[in-house]
Amino acid sequence: MLYDEQCNFMKFLSCCLILILLATGCGQQNTREPLSMKPDPHSFSNPNEAVVTHLHWKARVDFITKKIDAIATWTIEQKDGTTQIIFDTNDLHVEKVTLDNESTASYELAETAPNLGRALSVKIKSDTKKVSITYKTSPNGEALQWLSPQQAGSASPFLFTQSQAILARSWVPCQDSPSIRFTYDAEVTVPQGLLALMSARNPKEKNESGVYDFKMNQPIPSYLLALAVGDISFRPISNRSGVYAEPSLVDTATWEFADMEKMIEGAEQLYGNYRWEQYDVIVLPPSFPFGGMENPRLTFATPTILAGDRSLTSLIAHELAHSWSGNLVTNATWNDFWLNEGFTVYFEHRIMEKLYGKDYSEMLAMLALQSLRETIADLKNQNAYEDTKLKLNLDERNPDDGVTDIAYNKGYFFLRSIEEKFGRDKFDNFVRDYFSENAFKAMDTEGFIFFLKNYYLTRFKLTIEEDFLNGWIFTEGLPVDCPQPVSDRFDRVNEVIHKWEDTGQLDDAKTSSWSTHEWLHLLKNLPDSLTQSQMEAFDNFGKFTSSGNAEILTAWFTHTIRNGYTKADGELEDFLINTGRRKFLNPLYKELIKTPRGKEKARSIYKKARPNYHFVATNTFDKLLNE
Image 1: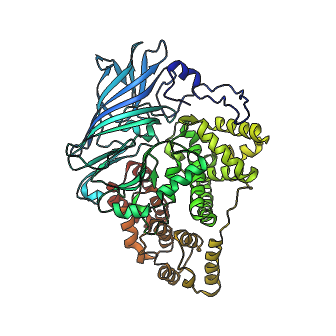
Image 2: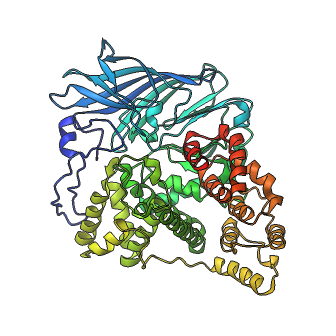
Image 3: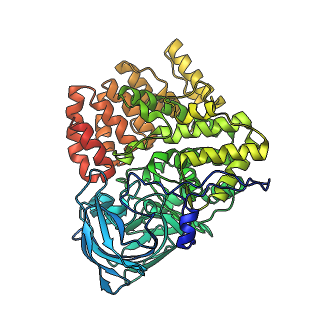
């Protein structure tokens, strides 16, 4: 669904999902009929009848009960004759509902539906403007990670949220569809001595009252609602960017992200102005389940990217790129997730190329292609080959099932194939206008295809063939004409590998200038089967077991598990217990459970580690380790 919150409701009905676009630079009007507002299979909401436009959220955070007491007051617009508005909830205790802050409303909570939670139906009047819902969250709310001081590695407790894909409904009753946008303001009370931050205009330091006010003037979908509370400090990078982290980590993080303003400037030069005013990053405790989350104005990031050499900051470029792809132009449903992530990976690589050169970005692309091929093979082995299409069918499934390399890296290589097929200058013009003309709206796959074909035809007199598009978007696997990145730096890594294969000798003279990416290429291209003496030689060569780099450790531990290299067992267990990022946990637990002894070890470690993991991670590994 396309929705601009500034439209009045009659405009809203006529403008939703508008894909009648003026041909850029040609003055011609497209003739495609506007899409009707399609149902979102992952939301109970009824935006064709009543839709939210603004949230006022007043909340108190209680670390003792592990609950948030809150009032969510929604400004709404409704169609004539509408008698109810429907919200998504999950494990919320609703205490009362009022209309226009006065009259008590009649409401009903439906039975819990798998993956979706419960629909909250509120009876409204023809002139209702506001719906206020007083409620409490559950201590086990799926989006909420309550950390004790010990779990946070701090003297203070910590709370953070993770709303994507459909977990916002577990801490705010909302219309939890990526196609529904709203502005918001908030007043949040937290224990004294702690700082609260949101995906909004944020404070830079703690105050004595523990009461913090927030405002988000740009309309966002619910999955971009975010909250973090803890002992947090701030350091500026530039006048519009900075870093939040716990005091012991903030200077380290500030050094690591020193190029952040350069990234913003480079992104703007490529695809237009940054539209969110401020771009900050907060480094969360290790239990954060993702590398990063693109919450507007405040990217959430894992501490695992603090490699000490700025080699993993492409993740920051990725989350920054989401300020255009995803946050600005959003996938209409989670079946169209590749539109968010494919564009973002493409944009990320272009930012890294602009800052660090083509050969650097080509290393990233080669690693992405290796990972993509592994994912395709893995999904095929799981009888899930359908999920290797870009356009997914996640109806009656958890949308989290779509968070794979397909959306990210197959999406990237599809967009790169358009660039290579028709030229970079043309593609840059297309992407810039795609973001500009669809800003603060949602886009589905079919709408993207229409926009793309029409743009190239009207602007450049070029026809993009259906077979080409279908081969990438609606077909399993990877097309034979997938772009093939080339890296001279990886060629030099290959020379080291070939010398070892021929002579058994490892040439450390050539590794002094290697980045994380070269080491990863080495590890990913070692034989699956290695002797104990070979494992020890590689460990001495790369100091892998003692590495502080999570990317390298994950690649190395895959080999230690596979080859029974027990010298790394202690570090492996410590890594699994103290790292919550699912990207790293998944391959290691999967490798462990391939043998009965390994599965027993995995279950033993998981029992210790589980309290440190977010729901997003436990939801995956509870199933995996209990099969």
